[in-house]
Every structure is written in structure tokens, then in C-alpha cells.
Length: 69
Length: 360
Image 1 (cartoon, rainbow over the protein chains, first blue to last red):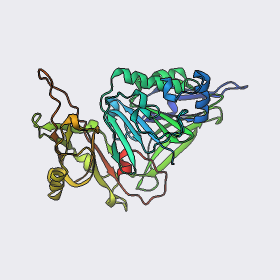
Image 2 (tube, rainbow over the protein chains, first blue to last red):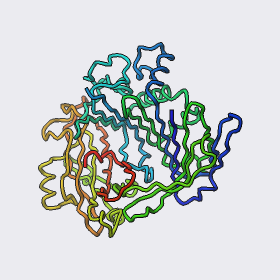
Image 3 (tube, each protein chain N blue to C red):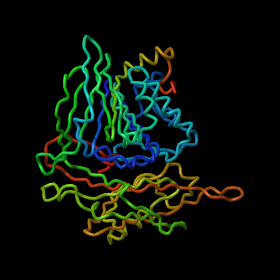
């Protein structure tokens, strides 16, 4: 699974709106976003195989994805 | 048989506020495009062709039995647009999304999907689904305030961009910083440059109205300010190729007479230079209740004038189904998507920003 978070600012200085904190010793990293006036796009890409496994794990298989709704 | 692709897009009325480069001439409602009859995502009946709307992955079971038929677009593409969705269907749509994204996505992000102005999901290949959400602005007056974490089983990329100039005059560029969490120790300065092929005129800047606002032959008038009539690139090789277009999405309660439109274009009347295409329900006689498709799409070239222009699309109203005791029905007619389309001679990353691209 891939996530892409994009922010599109108008005239705000970029460096003032985020802080990247890298995780150490296997801990997750985080970007802290604050006071950011922007349009936002989030896009995720999912491999269908992962999804089918999830469907089968969740509902026992045999259903279409829409059957989850 | 070729595996099908499907694209589903849910657009709120507020999507007109989405700025470039994310703006794509959004029309409110649910849009479903598909071009094939088989989908790997159907775990059952994988060898069955799609013969009914209700068989479509994701959206099929959400659609009501009374939903109108799709229309055909170039490229063997079927297209369904529903301007209004009952809240129950919208709820089911988001439940489907949440169930797909449940593991591997931040719960706060899942919750904020409900506030997105545009949500779409595409089956882009037999192995891949893409889900995308767009917010025109931050949900709070003081801007976005959130933490984005890296995931052990997912790649998470974050970018913050502003508009920049490309090296070539025909280029558009986005500059800023980006990085992959847990991989890049620092965010990297980044510049994306791409040809200035399309440029959407925000519908928030347009004034669209019916004249007269009654009767069976109203004219949809759209006033284009002088700024909208200036091509996105000037004094370059590509600028001469830029053309201004209007794309109308009309529900089946109204239609245009293609013969009348061709005649208007012949005299460049009403700002229409050329009828580029008309797809969907164009029968001149059928009443609304005997029209099977959801409506029609009209694409016209606009006269490129130097002064303010009022674009006029003559509409015809179909007879609606009689109701016992009479009554009224509201019909929404969204404003057209007005956009420049330019050829490009510059190498770069092609950024497709308008669904109408496939029509041009």
C-alpha cells in the first residue's frame, strides 16, 4: 500500500508549516503539519491481492468487494 | 477479453472551490466511467460479462434499480452521472471506502474523507486500485493541523508545493519539498515541470444563469470575464494552438438540438465557434420519462474574443412525467466547465487534469 499526501499552498512560506521527526530504533517517523493553509490531495494505491486476502479474512471469502458495503 | 477499467468519482457542490492544479472542472454528483465488461476484482463470476449496472464492482449494488442508463463516450467508454444521491447511498459509498481502507490507513484520515470535496476511486489495472480525496481548503480557519506517520507495511510520501515557473515559457511548474517518511532523513527540494496543456477556469469566477428563467426553451448563459479569455501561455510556439472550450453536463430533463447548435456555430452566434461533440440523449421528441440514458454531454469551441463574452447554449426542456394533482420538479443544470486546451512541444510530465481530455 502506498500513500501520497500533497498540499498545495498559495503564498505561505513552506518551511514554517511542517516539522519532520525521524523515528529511531525502528520507531515510526512523523511529519507534523501546523497552520498550513492549502488545498490537499491524498492518494493511495492498493494492490488487489492484499485486498482479496483482506476480503477473505474478513468475510470468509466468496463475496465481491462491494459485498462489504 | 480485455480487463476493464472503472473510475468512480463523487463530487460535492463545494468542489468548485478546489484550486489549480487539482481543479478538473468538477461537476457535482456521482460519476462512473467504465470501458470493459470484465473485472478481476469480482471474486465471484470472474468469467461473466457485465450486462447490468448492478454488476459493476464497487458502485453497482449502491445504485438504485431506477437509475438511468449510462451513455456512450468515444473510446468505447460508458459514462453514468447522477446529479443527486440519496444520503443512504452516499453513506453506503463511504462505508465501502472505509471497509477497503480500514487496515493500513490512519483512522483520522478515514474520518476526514467525509469532509473531502472530491473522492474518487479507480481500478487502473487488473492488479491496482487507486483511491483519492481532495479538500479545497483546510477544515479549520488556522489551517491544516495533523500528524502523518510512517507505516511499517506502507510507503508514505508527503509533499508541500506552491506554483512556480518552468524553465520554458510553455511550462507550468510546482515547486516545494517532498519526502518519504522513514526513508528520507530530510525533505528534498523538488520542482515538477510539465507542459501547460490544460487550464481550467474556476466556475466560482463564472456567472451562469438561465434566460428566461422559465419556459421550455431557456438559454444557459455564461459570462466569461476578460481574464478567462486570455490563454494560459502567451507569445510562444504553443500559444497559437490554445483553444477555449466549454463542456456541458446536462441531465435528461433538458437537451440541445444539434442542428440548431450547428447553425449557431456557423454564424458564431452566442459565442459558439464550433460544436465539437454531443454524446448521450439527443432525441428531439422523447419525453423525460421515456429517455433511458441519464443525459448528455456537449463540448463546444468558444469564440476567442478580446472583450468580455457571454456564452449562450440554447436548451430544450423535455416533457416531464405527469403527476396526479400537479406539482413542480426541480432540475439542476450545472455551469459548464470552461477550459483552455493547448498542444505542447515541450518535453515533460503529462499531467492530466480534465476528464474531458479523452474527448479532445
